[in-house]
Length: 410
Ligand SMILES: [Ca+2]
Image (cartoon, rainbow, N blue to C red; front, side, top):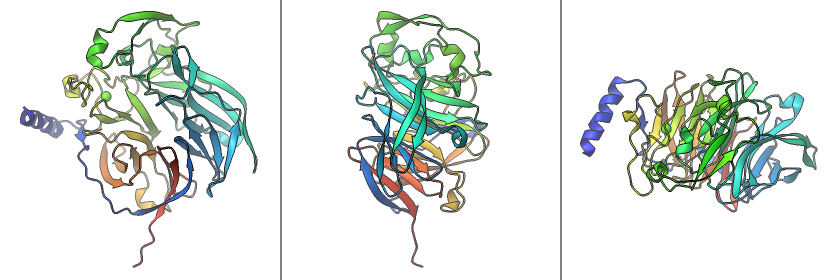
């Protein structure tokens, strides 16, 4: 059985350029071509974003946002929104506007407290920062996930389009499974919005209005349970349901990483269930399959159909069985500090405590380069204006780590 499956995969891989490759078995390298220096620690840090002056904004999942110098001095950012902190929920992403030099805008993604749980929200404020103080002025919610409720797997990553006109927002499936395929529900989608959080012209269903009332189900435990889950109530949108007009792609599970490559391709990483983490090339209107297909399994061991069985669903370019549990995805654009990595993608592996370098061919192809054993659960890795890397450890306390080249003796 296993052999037949392997042979089938090999056949597909040899005939189809899009055929995916499992890189889950890749071995970790313990000899690192970089030095890691812990600068300070935070309580459950989640994302960091660099300001042009070299200081960082860092979120803690439990709520606060900090303005942090490269020496580790912290200034609290005032006027940030209240969050629903529970397990995977809380204060999540922080992103600097592509027009920061003129608008000083900061975007936050976080879980808003609400009816029996919380919901993903996207907000924006103007950063008013001095050498000794920081606050967000005129903070406003631009978009919110409705209905709210239980479940983690928020997503909460933003990527700004290279022209600076639009933003892409990942919305995880909230552990609800089948709504990732429901065009009337934002969960399990990547949305494309204007910088003000409205549906973006050019979206596949721009101008469409979805169903106003959607069924609410008890949180299922796996995809089999989701098929027969009982409707416990319904939710009616207070205004028009714009989900269809907002949606760029569907069928996502836990999309924690998304970024544009230097060549202008949009890439995304998401966690599979038990096995089946994915690196996807995100293209307009495509359905990425969750929970209909996956290389993973339900947690109760029931198999999910393989993506090869449904050619109308977009397949990952790379996948991981066993999983790495990706924390994020970023592209390295530096030419000085680590010139050998210019154009590479970096994906942290929470479970494998690894940093994974991926190389891209600029034509929709990707290949795993190194997997480095960094010995910590890395939630975020970002590039500073000087080209060095900074990482956040997913722990309490979790380290802020500066990554610099190894100075070789010979
Ligand atoms: Ca998929």
